[in-house]
Length: 465
Ligand SMILES: Cc1ncc(COP(=O)(O)O)c(C=O)c1O
Image 1 (cartoon, rainbow, N blue to C red):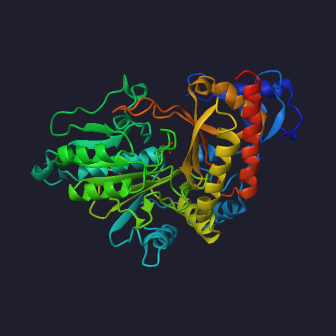
Image 2 (cartoon, rainbow, N blue to C red; image 1 turned 135 degrees about the horizontal axis):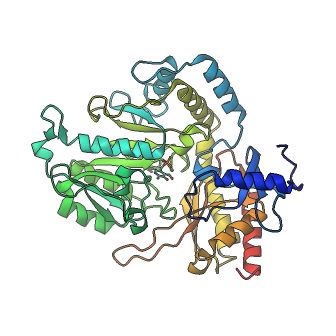
């Protein structure tokens, strides 16, 4: 199929073919997928065509403020990635984790070796790493590491001194993935009902407790009362699906201190925050890195080119022999993409600049979007290139129409579910529009994104929302 230029229109037969192609993919949105198709993309620009309505087939140029669930940090078709893939294919081979690989060594040495990029936080003498295929798989491995740490492999029984530690602490509104082990860490009824959860009682039971995120007092009380029963804590440094919630200063460091004090493993889910908060890791504050026992990174790690995640854990944490072997644990080709991409991001300062540019972006979003359309938006939140604008209840009820108007205005954004109802009298959190552009977006791109969002929202409001 020849891809027409923006402004041209696809024939009815081509539209029907694309619609049929879309129907061949399982729909995980209960019929709510957007009736648009991406025909081709380069950098931040995607050529999309509507598949329904009076404009069906018309090709439009859309600016991407989403990065594909916040993963394509180098946009589409980046020359550095083309080179890394070509070179990786030509030279690196495909050995598994059963033996070493030169390319994997180069990657890990460059990150965790004595001069490594992340050695201040994760020195190789104290940490080791494993690659998984997705964020969810990374979190599954993290959960397994926590559970294994309470288990005596020689006796194949719980360690007597840790036998009471069967509780995991997670946070309301959390999203860690949708695989079986992780469902128990999601506290929304919608995700849990009808799905078997691990038993709470017995030596292998798993009890999960939830706290509202970012509330000091509840955290202190919980640890004082239940700290001895905790095996691990799972936390997103900035909650994503809950609606881009940034915790108050000092919260994450206090959480880490409480974990240490009570001998509880701290797991940071940095699948989404990786490379987006002005630093590579969201577990950072004015004092520097906040220590964790396990950190899981994903999404941008694969540069939008390979689907991968990495679990970085203290060396003493491991899984019983062959219990977590994976066909694609840091495949040499994946390692080549990661090494080249991370070198590029840090060489060009693309991660650091998201700090000040993100601040400007939020100021503009507050002024030109949230304050300009109070009937649609209520609050702008975020850090770096991880930003959210919470919708009003009324706009949240009309999300499909808002998204279509934004696409008409040439901008693609994604929406987060919002934490919804929270405990302890905290206010309900509605869905949030997420603006998490690829890191290649510069100042002018961000301004253009805000202008297009403004245009789309205006049409939405003027058409009676
Ligand atoms: C914080 C967080 N953890 C884990 C995941 C799961 O990652 P994946 O979709 O790669 O399985 C996501 C995905 O959105 C996420 O945002």
